[in-house]
Length: 315
Image 1 (cartoon, rainbow, N blue to C red):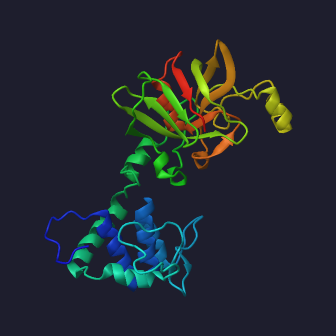
Image 2 (cartoon, helix red, strand yellow; image 1 turned 135 degrees about the vertical axis):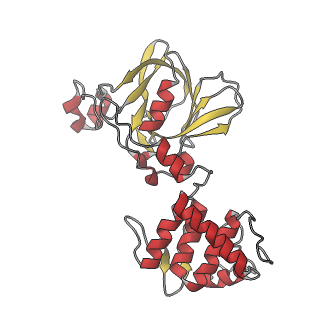
Image 3 (cartoon, rainbow, N blue to C red; image 1 turned 180 degrees about the horizontal axis):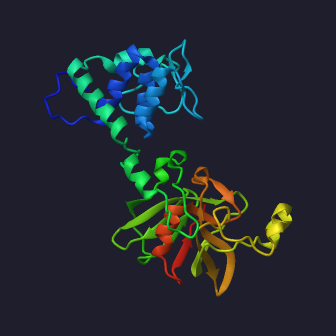
């Protein structure tokens, strides 16, 4: 919080922007709360605030306020940093009350400077929670028109930003190139060998279908034919029509790229595959296979030769 006007060129921090958004809530509650909430969870603050000012909640989204008359902030997310309970629990306190506490001491220049930075973030590609801008994410997950079956852009708005591809610190004794599946946290790591790994968000096996242990990539395929196992056909009789194989294509469950996992020379029936279902990332939905967004799977596939070790951690 700044007690004096900001000097020209002073960097505007995320805390400044949240403070400014909360101060704006005194004047336009819906817009201010929308901006603050979206700054915290990394969504497109500018777009959502615009909807709030116009009174429209946006496609598939609930209104920013759970109760307009009470002026309470929608319960997701909980505000960090500047917004603190303060005296006592203050559980259920209206946001306008908390806003006044936060806004005290924020000069008009500081407010304008932070608001300008906030506007630039909203118009220029808001940063996601881990620093990847929306513009970068849209490029990374853009369409791939030159494939056998042209691939559309991934619907990254439906993916929690923490599951987008990135390089992360990762200490392990596994050799460079090893794939580590962490089903409990919905990640796949590709070990880079320099204390880092490329991390991808994934979907994994649902309860009762998870497994762990060591395997290896026994074979690879682009635009594979999918044949449901007999056990799946017994569980899901509607899959019987593909007992002789489902042709490749965008609707094929294996998608554009597939890594087949083997143990002791035998196919385990498990794969790492390309998923076009963005909403599935970060959830357990499969019969034990691991799905990455198509663009992520293509990235991993290109760097993974046959015989690559795969370690599946306990969930």
